[in-house]
Image (cartoon, rainbow, N blue to C red; front, side, top):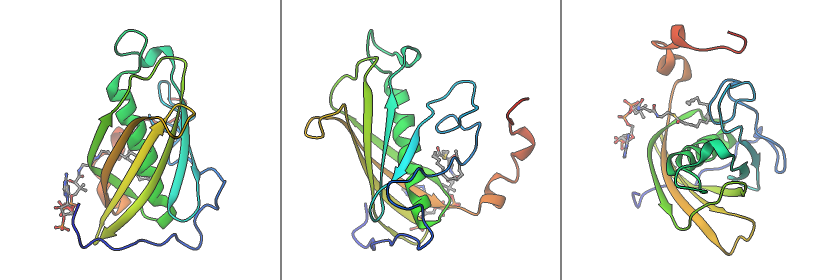
Amino acid sequence: MPTDIEPLARHPKATRPGEKIGLHHSMCYGCGDEAPVGLRITVVAGEGVTTTATMKVEDWMQGGPGVIHGGVLSAAFDEVMGTTPLLLRKPVVTGHLAIDYAKPIPLGSTVHFTCEILGGVGRKIYTRAYAHLGDPDVLVAGAHALFIEIDLEKHFAGYRDKAVHAGE
Ligand SMILES: CCCCCCCCCCCCCCCC(=O)SCCNC(=O)CCNC(=O)[C@H](O)C(C)(C)COP(=O)(O)OP(=O)(O)OC[C@H]1O[C@@H](n2cnc3c(N)ncnc32)[C@H](O)[C@@H]1OP(=O)(O)O
């Protein structure tokens, strides 16, 4: 992370603390409520530029016997951390994501995520997140990620004809 990042302020019209940040697409693998397979994560706005989220670890998320697959946890962090810049009213995509896996996460558990925006420079937004299973003092994973602000229309212009919509 560069040393010249600046603090980023919550947008005046951002989702209020305690409220759910809306789906960005109902068919999104991370947050969509109509996706045939997905994490169905709901991210809740916190104070300032922070968020929280939870995810139930379902049987289909298994990697090693009885525990979550590392890639599923990575996707969950991506979703939580990528949603958080919406508090700035900035659409982003992931540029870089790094996970520290501290403890195995059993199937059937509920993962609790906390995320904060550390700051930014230009179009770059740096975030950090942690995960625990109910006791915030016992972390099971942590993550750092860099998100890049995009022009939504331009970024997806070449792919929209491939988009999948609910009911198709
Ligand atoms: C699912 C999507 C929904 C999106 C809708 C939004 C709705 C709201 C969010 C909802 C939640 C979503 C949560 C899931 C989010 C994903 O999973 S997004 C999917 C995965 N990510 C991608 O597909 C991105 C693919 N990559 C790209 O398209 C392009 O590389 C990027 C990221 C747009 C950057 O390209 P660019 O616009 O040409 O900009 P570029 O000059 O290369 O980079 C800008 C700056 O970032 C730096 N940078 C770029 N990449 C890196 C890197 N890996 N490491 C370090 N620095 C980097 C550059 O060095 C540059 O720095 P400066 O020169 O400004 O100092």
